[in-house]
Amino acid sequence: MLLLLLVAGCSSGNGGPTALDVTAAQARSELGSTARWPLDTGLSRDKVQAIRDGAYRFCRDVHPDDTKCFTQQDRSIFAVNQAARLWRSYLAEPSKHGSFPYARAHQNLPDAFQDIVDYCWSTYVDAGKRDARMLGPCLMSAVGGDFFGVVPVA
Image (cartoon, rainbow, N blue to C red; front, side):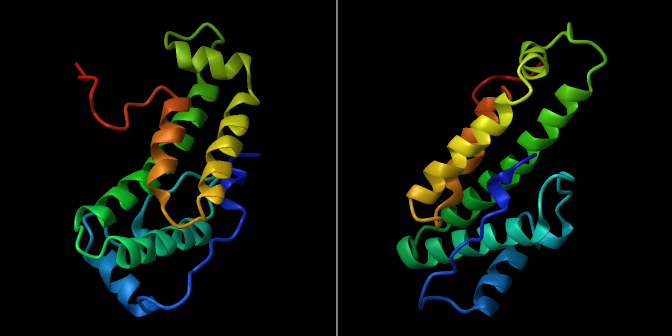
């Protein structure tokens, strides 16, 4: 059930950087190779990699001088993973009367997360499945995460 978001393929685009260019750029990134990412069990590593490849091609094609683009893509894609992990942890809370309101909400409405995944994925697809910066904030909002780090954690 989790994340039909990563079931669909991701277009690689035409022209632009080669697969080796993309792989090298990813290896140099702060998060490194996707192969080392601790992915949620409901996510396909191959699909995450395909989304990341497309996102890096987007940066090279559309924002070649913006060095932040790659970092923003990585952060967003990794946030998809974090949202899935949070969702799973909410469902694993021992009681439907847990202390965190988002956990209670997801326990009371177990299909809600998939509805949100479907919404986030559809906006990504409608935008051409190239720029993944929208996915992380969209899914993190579903689990009460603060993607932009505005809310202080005490």
